[in-house]
Image 1 (tube, rainbow, N blue to C red):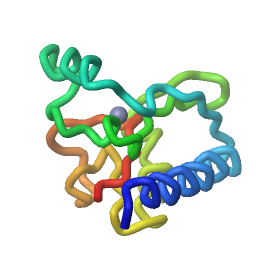
Image 2 (cartoon, rainbow, N blue to C red; image 1 turned 90 degrees about the vertical axis):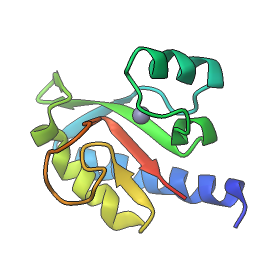
Image 3 (tube, rainbow, N blue to C red; image 1 turned 180 degrees about the vertical axis):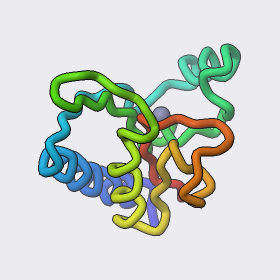
Image 4 (cartoon, helix red, strand yellow; image 1 turned 90 degrees about the horizontal axis):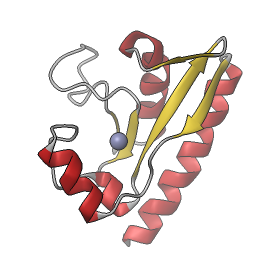
Length: 118
Ligand SMILES: [Zn+2]
């Protein structure tokens, strides 16, 4: 399958995720989606990212700002509902709060991050 086909599936699934958030009394704004190599290098060198192979570079990842009752939150516990739903939408979907898909808060946590890892 071409990258563009994966990107289209990813984008459609993001629309479902956004809808699911609002159905559960959450609101979202966009953080980063597609990222340049230059920006990724800055994040890598400053420890904000652990990889130079981020799915943001392929337009297969997006970071959201989550609001609950009008309050911005990135807490793992708050975002987990969305992360769990995200991983039901496609077998290649991963939530940054649960890289290992083990339902445990372990390792490097990036709760606002949703990606398709192909
Ligand atoms: Zn991200």
